[in-house]
Length: 350
Image (cartoon, rainbow, N blue to C red):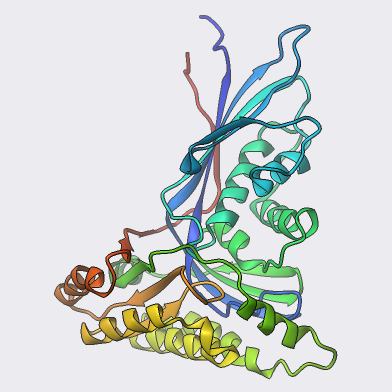
């Protein structure tokens, strides 16, 4: 049997929605409580690896499929075109006797406030981990992905997105001292899992979310010496209420926790709940929805999570009506992810 010309390494990681307690998983919050839900579509990383031919210079290639870009990464690695991807390659000690092409893809739109960039970095680091000595746990990969953003790239970044991508499922995150946290997966019966999946709707608001001066102002207020951080407590409380509601299978109470969290975001700054999000919430209420949540930090663009009522017909009517608000709005199909990071090597390739 002939030896394949290259190895193929694969990794996938889910995105996250409905992050109750978001904003409390940050360095300025110091301690936090978050409940979030890992869903498909997931982020995919695929590595094509082969030994360097004698006398040949090493090649690192990134194919950012969603952006239609394929380019050679300068050596030593510089952060130029896609700094997050390049920083992930830089931080992992991949053996130098390998040529490497990295293909990255996600069906989730970039800037959707669903932790897509975290899912990409977790998947990429997870794939690269199969090429290095030893193995990292999913928790370690999540922590490394978060450090890439904060230490390598100097970005403001909480810890919840990476943890949800690494663990999957319904995650209850207790950040006892930034950035250290324990993660408990909320295990519920199939009946509750299936019902939650049936009721949840993800609506993309037609444009990418980007950190804005509004976020900067909120952060600035919290990072002042002796700052009043009491406005974060309702967000932590919403996460705890959401956890308890899901354990009981009480969707009415879970919807209330989502609404209380959105009210808490609005209290941090009114612009964190955009007019586009408010319009989707109003439409959802007209169609019997019992919960709504701005995903991520909030602000312009991004996405929202809707918890529909018990009648599927009303859910379908809501989905059909969403484009009437704005043709750019999209309902993105989602499925709850029982798994977080998955890593494997393709076999039988020729």
